[in-house]
Length: 509
Image (cartoon, rainbow, N blue to C red):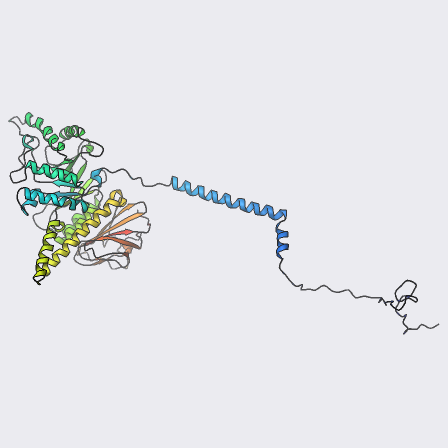
């Protein structure tokens, strides 16, 4: 029987109960012998995890352990860094500020009362004019007065309570002492060149009565409120025996707030040594040598550089100008004395005299009424204002800046020999170089620049490569520099002094 290749049963399995078999009915389906399998998609479509899937995956035990380790590592690292920082701060060397005594923080003002009074009035009127100046001097930053010329050079301990013939009287001095105490000003009496040891007999021994009277004279003035005494290194009183006797007298009057001092004026190149240097509290040194003529700019520069090379921190020094200099250089020297280590001692200056300023204001007002203003009076008044502003700026900066009170001292040799290989233009050797030094305390540094010469000097940072690049002006002799400055563009004018506070931390050797 031939196969029906084209029949409906071809390719089908027919049988009872099978689809397509006879008897399966009209709904029977035909099942193909070979069914092709679907091939996988080589590039399945990527989709991010949903929020639910991500939370389910992150909540597994493995992820919990990783997160716990990471949090623990963070806190351990943070505590370690904090502990290390504290240890570095505690163990790192820090400058320790020693408590300063009153004479180490004070600005001394040297004054001759009789000369002050002769310029104004005689008798009580003159001393009253001086007393009226005391609050003004205190406002300028003055802390102590050194009263000079009160005693005759030939005075002895028998008459130390008697003033010189041309000077003020004892009641006037007592009144001045009371007014000074009210103005919170210490007073130091100058006994320099006064014969404190008394007369000697033919055998060369000092008069015993005089030696007995000397402590009595000291007690007399200490009881009036005097804070100390000044002697010269050439006086006979400058001896270990005499100073020990003075110390015994001082103990009777010393308190924590009122400690009495001995100030020695150094007139020689080298101070005669004592076996116990603590007998002297302050040594006053002159920056300029004594001279009958006004010193030239080169002489002033040489004297300044000599002292900058020989700053001694073993003794507490009080700097004063001493010799004669031009008016412009006096302002430069004022900046120098105010910024050197130690206590500045400023001589009486009419430029900051309040009575002089008042007289200028009065004269200007009269001239304004006459509609004939005087240009010279206006210039003088501006000079007084600038001088007082410079004095006040320096004294107040010194009073509140630790670097200027007890900071370290570093001399900066800004001259042609320091960097001869530099391509920068160096100062001409025929003129004094820029003199400069640093006062440093911790991260605070004060740069003091002095141009004694007659030509402007640019500051080349190549001379001192360790200096920061910028700072801010604190004071200048002309009081015409304010705000911040770049050392790369700084130029110091002739006979000018500048004080700059550096606000970057540099490394200084």
